[in-house]
Length: 439
Image (cartoon, rainbow, N blue to C red; front, side, top):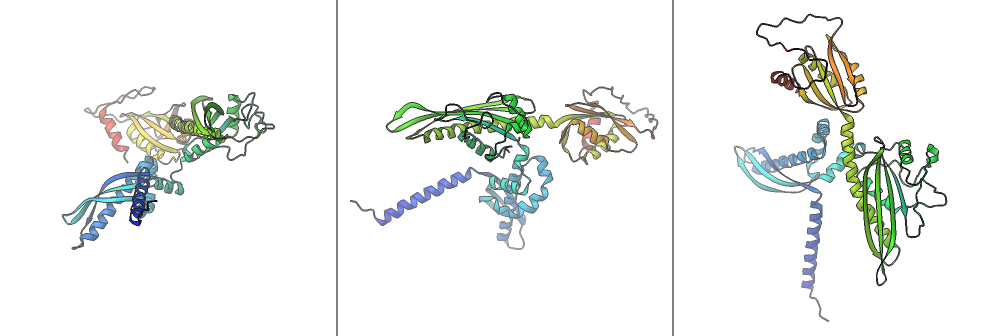
């Protein structure tokens, strides 16, 4: 038998180690984001080395800032600038996986560098979640899972919500789907194996796939959406020696509590080989994971759009002495904490249309505005619907001041009719209001 020399053995071990290290690095790189930033620091005396180190730190801080901006919304960015500076930038190197200085030079009394760095977005997201700033579950729907499953030995599908007497319920597909949702921070209203009794909530299923009862159960448990699922596995006729082939299929249907109808559907199939019944379980896991990943993406997209449409409405504002009164209204709106965002859609010299994102209904918003007090004028809420709120400025009962007579050369702007504005009055008035909005 040929003996392997110690040198060849060490060489082979070294090559394997290098390969494994490179593979691990490549896998980690998939979780990082690459940034190219510049840094600058003034040179004190002849201490170029210290200036270079400080310039590199400056460049890395910019990379961390860019990473922070990429994982939070504009609203969260504005609310948590103190966290960025007090908690993240003081620990810049915690988030830097690797970096290299592209180039550096002294210029006009300062040291300049260009740096390529890899920032760990996963670590940053974890830090934000731990601090309570980045709580994905808060922005995701609460879900009730109703997954029926029929395994190799089952004569009919098993479930926990319909005719459960004498049946033990353990679903491989449900376990896989729960793992997908948990990773995506989608909260479930039923956790573990604590399955509730529908009768305790006065809910009766007429059949396993009774969608009306499913939505009633979801409403009783505080769910936003219900996932109705069916999973099954069976042995196929294909064989190879002692190995058998197993097939599995899953189908998930999402019911939206708000619309009271089916909104999403996804299916998947999978096959697995095994010498025993474990192959059926493997096929179920694969099919459920594939369908679950597709379901997660569709559900997140649907919910994001639903929340945008649900929370956003138009605010129409008009009236006499518009500019001065509009500025006063805007200042008062800043104090309403439930307003997530308010941005101009159309601005004129005597009216404005704003898009409002509000944590509540348009009627609640109108009530909040009515509780505000204004000097020298009042407001009249003339329209409140699911899509819009209309406000008109009115004179205060104690301040009926006669309108000023315009100068001969002053352009008179006629008051708008009592309808929703359809266009801007003139570009001059629009420009004045846009500048004022930046206060």
